[in-house]
Image: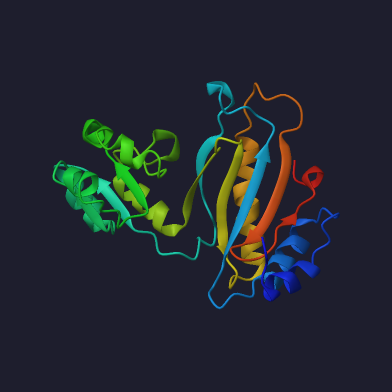
Length: 230
C-alpha cells in the first residue's frame, strides 16, 4: 500500500523498534496528525484472552474525563414517563415501535448510541440483526439498558465510551482528538486503560496486555511499553 508524503514524514518521527511511555506516545501521535481535519486519536489494545469463551469476554464502558471531542447523537427507546425524562436529558431521538420500520426498512441510522429501558428490550430485540453488527445494540454491561435514562444520556454526552473485544481479541477505542492537549489525551488514555485492566477476566492466563498502540486517524501507530501499563 502506497502511503502519502505526509504519512511517510510522520512515520520518520517514530522508531518502530521502541515501545514508548504514555507521555512520549501522546506527543508523537499529536505531531504525526497532519491531516487537514481534526483527527481522532485511537487506542488499539490486543489482549491475551480468548473472546470465544464467555468467561474471557472483556466489555464495559468508561467516561473519558475530557470527552471524545465528538458530538454524540443518542437514540432512546422508552415509553410512558421515561419519554419525557429522556427528552429533558437531551436525547436526540426518543421513540418506540414506530422506529422499527424506519431503521429496518428505510436504513435510518442518524444516531451513534442506543439506550433502552428494560421494558423496551423486546422491541429493540427485533432490531438485533441490524443494530448488532454495527455495535449499536443496547447492553446492561455498558449501562445502555437502564431505567435511569437521564444518567445514561448525561454520561454518553459527557464522553462515555464502550469498549469490547473484536473477533481478533483487540479493543479499538477513541481517546480524543488531535486538537486536545497532551494532558487531556493522557488523562483519557489512563481512564480507559485503567478500566480495561480492571476488567481482566479471572480466567485469563499469561500476559494480559499483548500490545498497546496509539494512533491518529491518518497517522502511523505508536507502540507503548506494556510492562509500564499493567
